[in-house]
Length: 269
Image (cartoon, rainbow, N blue to C red; front, side, top):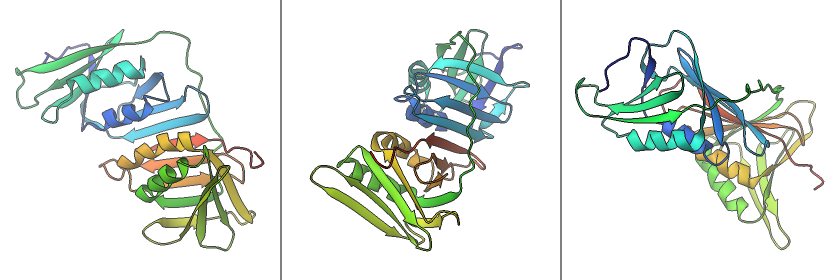
C-alpha cells in the first residue's frame, strides 16, 4: 500500500458500489462533478442531451476517511470508470486519494500495509463553475413498482415504440403501461399487490394521471435495479415531470438513493 501522505486527504470505500454507479452514468454523462463530503458522496448533473437530471445521495460510504472538508472534483466519466475497473479486485480495498490536480484511485490489501497495490491517476478538469441545479419536486401522485417487474416491462414495451405511456385513474387499484406503433399496441395492466405494484396514490385533485416517457431514457434508468428491489415513480401532474427513484436497499446504505427527473412528452404527440 502507498505510504499515507500527511497533507493528502483520502477515503477508503466500504465496497465497490461506486463502480456500478459510475457505470450507470457512462452513456448519459461525459463529465462528472462529484462531491465527496465527510459522510456522503453526492452528484447532481444533467445528462449530455439536457433531457433529465440525475441526483445521487450515498450516505456513509466510507470505511475510513481523513476528510475534514468536502472535496469537489470534476473528471471525465470514462477515465474515472476505466481507473476504477483497472485497479479494483474483490480481495482488495478501494481508496480515493485527493490531489490538487487529480484523484489517485488505489486498490490495496488492508491486511498488509507493505503489500502490493494498484494505482491509477485520474486528471481533474478545470473550466467554468458548474451551475447549481434545483428542481421543483413537489410531486403529488406516487407509484411504487417492484423494480424487477418494472424493468422487465420497460424492456418488453421498448421493442414496440420509443415512447411508453404510464397511466392510472382515481379510485382504481391498477396501473397501465402501454406503447403503440403503426401496426401494434402492447398493453400491460397491473393490479396493486405486494409483488408487482406495491403502492398507488393519486392526488385528490387529479381524476387521472398520464405520462409519456422516452423508452431509451427508461432503459438507462432501469439499470439501477441492481441497487434496489423497488422503484418509486413520483408524478407532478398529467404530462408533467416525473421523478424515478431507486433506493439502495440491496446494499447497506440507509437514506441513500439515485433519482432521475425527466419531463413527460406531450400527450398529443
